Amino acid sequence: MTASTTAPESTPLERDARLVNARHKDIAPGEIAIGVIIGRTSEFFDFFVYAIASVLVFPRIVFPYVDALTGTLYSFAIFALAFIARPFGTLLFMWIDRVHGRGTKLTIALFLLGGSTMAIALLPSYAQVGSLSAVLLALFRIGQGVALGGAWDGLPSLLSLNAPENKRGWYAMIPQLGAPLGLIIASCLFAYFLAILAPQDFLSWGWRYPFFVVLAINVVALFARLRLVATPEFERLFESRELQPSPAFSTMFRERRTIILGAFAPLASFALFHLVTVFPLSWVTLSVGEDPVRFLGIEALGAVVGLLSILASGVIADRVGRRAVLGVSAALIAVYSGFAPRLLDAGETGGAIYMLGGFVLLGLAFGQSSGAVNDSFPAESRYTGAAIVANAAWVIGAGFAPLVALFLASRVGLWSVGLYLLSGAICTLGALAINKEFARRSA
Image (cartoon, rainbow, N blue to C red; front, side, top):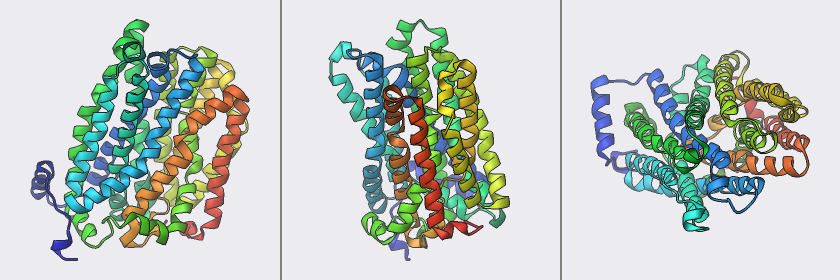
C-alpha cells in the first residue's frame, strides 16, 4: 500500500507523540503494554463511576418520584443505553479514521467520552428541572457509549502481534487489567466522599467530584495512546492492512461465523463481570441495607483479588492454552452460579464470600476473554472484526446484566440470578465447542 492510501495524521498531539517516538526510537512490547493499561483503565474508570452513581445517586436525584427499587431499575435501563450506542460509535469513528486519521479519531472520541462524563457531573436534579433530568442523563449516557465505540484503537491487537510466541496468554490479559484498576479508583473515590460527607452534602455535590476526575485521566490516556498509534510498528501494520479499518458491513457479512462465535465465547466472564461489580451493590443497598462505604471497600478488595487472578490467567494460559482457561473457568462459573448469588442474603460474611470468590473466577475468565478470536480474522479484517466482536459481546453479555439481574432477584429471587449467569457459561462452552480453531494452543 502506498503512502497515498494512508489516512491523514492531523492532530498536534499526534505530532508531539511522533517527536517523542523519534527521540526514543523503537517501542518495546512493555511500553505498548503500559499504554494499553492506561487507556483501558481510563475507560473502565469512566464506566464504574457511572455504574456506582446508578445505584447510590441517580435513583435519588433523578427518579425521586418512584420507590428506590423502581428508581434503580430506571437507572440501570439508562445504564444499558451506552452499550446500545457503542456499535454506532464504532461505525461513525471508523469513518473518521479513514477520512481524517487515527489521531483525529482518537482525540475526538476520548474528549467526547470525558465531556459526556463531566456533563453528568453537572446534571441538574429532578427537583430543579423535572423529567428533563432523566432525558439529559440518557443523552449523556448515549454520548459515553458513542465515544467508547470510537475509542477502539487496535492497541490490544498491536500488543498481541508484538508479543513473544510463548507469552501470548500473558500479553492477552494485559488490556483486561484496566477493569480492576478502574474499579479500585472509582470505588475508593466514592467511599471516601461517602465517609467524609453528610448524606445531603454527598447527594448535593459530593458525588460529582469523581466525574470531574475523568477529564484529567483521559488527557493522560489520550497522549499514551497517541504515542503508540504513532509508532513505526503501528504504521507498518496499518500499511499492511492488519490494523486498518475495513468496511464494517462487508466485514460482518464475510466474517459472520467468527464474529458470532467471538461474541458468545466470553459471555460467561462478561455476565459475571456485572454480577460482581454493579448488581451486588444495588442488592445489598436496597434489600440488605448494608453500609455502602463498607461494601465499596469490599468491592475494591475484590478488584485487587481480580487483578491478581487476571495475572494468574496469563501464566496459566501460556502453560495449558487459552482455550483450556476459557473452558475451565466457564465450567467453574457454571458451578458458582448454582449457589453463590444466594450468599448475598447470608449476611456480611456471605456477601464477602460471594464477592471475593466471584472476583477470582472473573479474573481467570475475563483475563483471557479479550480478542479470543482475533487471530481467526484475516489480516485485512482484524481491526474492524475485533471491534465488532467486542461491541457485540458487551451488548449481549453485559449491557443489560444489572437490569435483568435486579429485576429477576426482586421479582423471583436470587436463585434466578444464578440461572442468568449459568446461561452465559453455557454460551461460552458452546462457542468453544463449535469453533475448533480455539483448540490451537497459540490462539
